[in-house]
Amino acid sequence: MHRVLAETYPEAGCELDFRTPFELLVATVLSAQTTDRRVNAATPGLFARWPDPYAMAAAPRLELEQVLRPLGFFRAKTDSLLGLSAALVERYDGEVPDRLDALVTLPGVGRKTANVVLGNAFDVPGLTVDTHFARLVRRFEWVEPQIASDPVKTEHAVAAIFPRKEWTMLSHRLIWHGRRRCHAKKPACGACPVAHWCPAYGTGPTDPVLAAALVTTQGPA
Image (cartoon, rainbow, N blue to C red; front, side, top):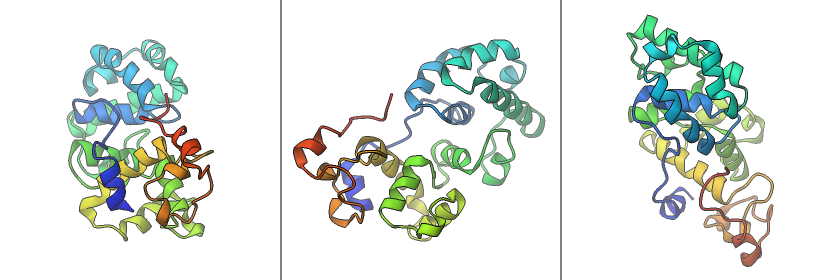
């Protein structure tokens, strides 16, 4: 299944725009409960005003909230950005650490965000168990039902199946497939390249024409 997904999505990769580890860290924190496209629309202006942890740690709260307001949960996200920026300045001389145990100590940063940063900014393999990843490994029955609702247990279970070097790209391919074909409410089963092996085949339309109409070229807006 992974081989076929790799052939289907040769361009798969991180869909958040970033130039530095700090920008990716911030963008990933902001992506909670919104879409990558909305985050990508907001971050150019954000980083033009506060380009690094030193600047962002000193950002006026109300100004930062106004920039983040379109993304939803802007007060909580403001708290996270101010907190993680201050922590980077105080503990790491303004540099984003390249270790999971250090990243998860930053405000607003959990294992999912840490693995995104490690895999895409530092080339350290990691599994990103977001909603798409979790949904697909549950449908594929790669994990036992009793652990499928626990992101950490899911991460460890899938990590035991695949070589470590594959983890980051596996995450990208599953997320791309989840955004483009294996949708939560109506998956495009009749247009799925891994339908032959999928225990959940038939959850969505199996007619090729109906299924093809559900396939998107990118994630949701």
